[in-house]
Image 1 (tube, one colour):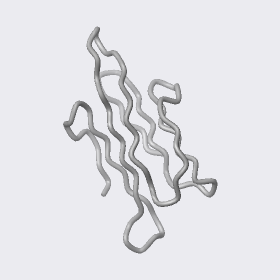
Image 2 (image 1 turned 180 degrees about the horizontal axis):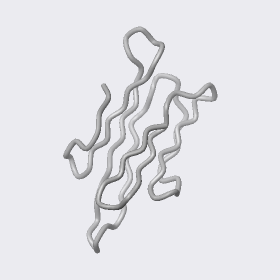
Image 3 (image 1 turned 135 degrees about the vertical axis):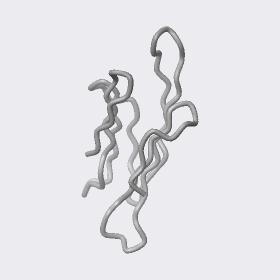
Image 4 (image 1 turned 90 degrees about the vertical axis):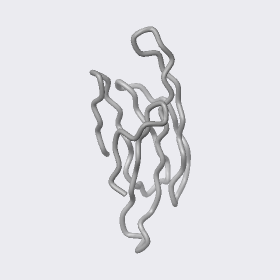
Length: 83
């Protein structure tokens, strides 16, 4: 699980799981859940400081298939990647 803290908000991004269930957490609450083996795209909207904000999380497998990668965008701006 990767954890990103931005402006006091915590986003937890899943790693690869044996069940294939990906849960993305925002401040401890599940905001997106999908089932995928190779990775999926998650998008969710929250309110921060009275304004709507859209987050995008993309998960995928590395070319060798042993580990995964992820990126996190907030309103289209990259906050985190380990790709």
